[in-house]
Length: 247
Image 1 (cartoon, rainbow, N blue to C red):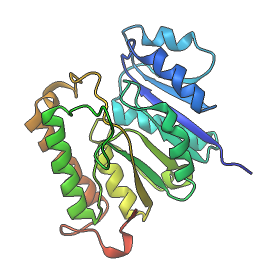
Image 2 (cartoon, one colour; image 1 turned 60 degrees about the horizontal axis):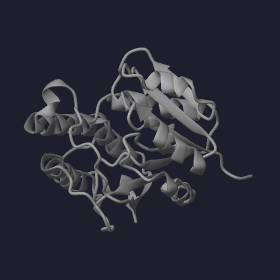
Image 3 (cartoon, one colour; image 1 turned 90 degrees about the vertical axis):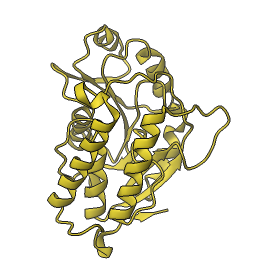
């Protein structure tokens, strides 16, 4: 029996991009879920007018991680085998969805990387975001025994049965740090796939004080430390027996 896959998009105030992105996503994924995370700019009305997606609405904004939590739960409750997550701001290429699904037949978690390979036309990453990504990626590799090149890419695929092992609580943009720690703690098989580096909007808000790069970096370190302690990792490295396989 073929595996059932779902593509999910967390969306918050993406009225400029949402229809164009979904037009492409639905070409490559027959089952599409949009988690509307409390949009107030007209995005909701565009989503409600479509008949080719499944829609879950948050009455108030719960954050990027909170929207992904909803997508994880939906995939589990509806009996999907593979969940692909893709952002709705035009940074990801929907035609790569089938490649992520295929790769996820052999791995528990497939993570896009904007730095694993170079593509013609790659954008320059905003300096502060690139610096923070490099620092946090290096810290994850040192502490978890990984060999990642991109800690924060939102283009991912998961075996849904693997998601059931995770107990995630972070609701903001720091959620991927908790995800990486728990993935290693549960011995998930991880692989990175190269994706182009596309930045159409460099002015993303991370929320209040987190728009300051140094404050955001400190917050990420705090979430990482809290996640390590919750997963009972002592010292700076994860125990060898739970290290993820990164290929």
